[in-house]
Length: 501
Image 1: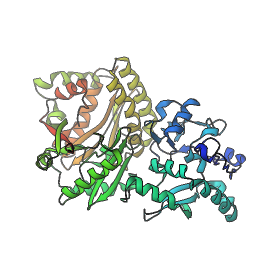
Image 2: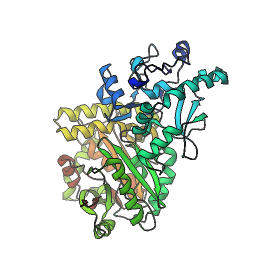
Image 3: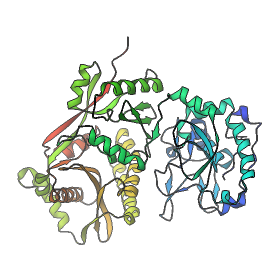
Image 4: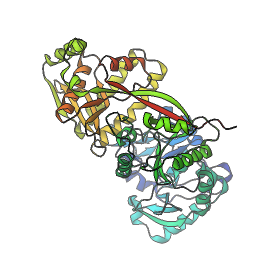
């Protein structure tokens, strides 16, 4: 399952260069490493090009396993036993691959791997010490195998394929032993994407991102929910985030099926004009004239400045901001219906609220799946259904990495079964942001109950304000936010370049 063969996985022009298998099948069948991953957002998930996706779907893999048909990492599925995740092509009973004869280049290469070197200025080929078989091999056999792979990777069609799919190149890993530089691939990537090193956003990058957010000078009570690391990282498994440094500013980019865009303006405590212009220059290079090149979540304080620089500014759905004391108490006639619904849940037997723990992941996953079925049964429109389906990976990341993301979560149990959960984070020292919230829709008042409990906890810990993010353009979600009487709607904007003459 780890060998590189070229008769199906590589362009037809290389089909005559057949590479023998390095790792014997007997070793693969005993292995418990390949094709399995600890988390849904694992950076080691195999990457499929557009052609490889089509081949995989033709062989029976579900199209939804590939969020971007132009090329993406596969969406892994929870292990049937509840621990970890597996590639959807993996057959756990037999330790075999359903698409072995047409597995992607990324899988064919293993246990060799392409990655950037530590300086991020050269693509190299290395062997992964995590493969148990590699520990049994003599260096000379690895060298001979590497020479064969190098011959394939120097073929023009393969170089171009890799340059078109930069995510085939991994981040530097200490446990991957460097064997040889890949100069042709390095040059092709530089010509295609530019000389600025781009880094996939990973958990290890979050301290850097948090520091940049804090130093951007855009904090305050009316701060947008997007100015926090977890807001972005939970989507990293669905839409890959990249970052780079431009003129001393940290710049985030999202690689979407439609093209590249920025989820935030350049993060800097200095002048923004130069990094902003350079960021748009990069997006023009990557996207061409496509209108997808844009910057989202521009705060009102910056929008006017950018508009004066002749950028095009248009409004985006606002965040909803509330007084924490109001939502914690729910007093007065305007909260009468929410208070009655909460009381109904309080009168039920065996209702408990507890902090989320990693062991609750299975229960939360089961609830999310049931909640999704409930919402589908209610007749969602196509846009709402798309958002719901996309949300699954974000919830998986929150369940798995809550502590690393500095999220606080709660679960509501009724008769011992998880019936609701919520996650949030401190946006500022006095503003709590509700990130995710799921409640069994068959239990009247449960959504209101868990929301009030969240607000009470935040208020008791010093929150003056509650931010519930935007409504994603969904009328039902907008109504549910409006009935809680927001203190204000924090306006957000999208910035684009003016059309060129």
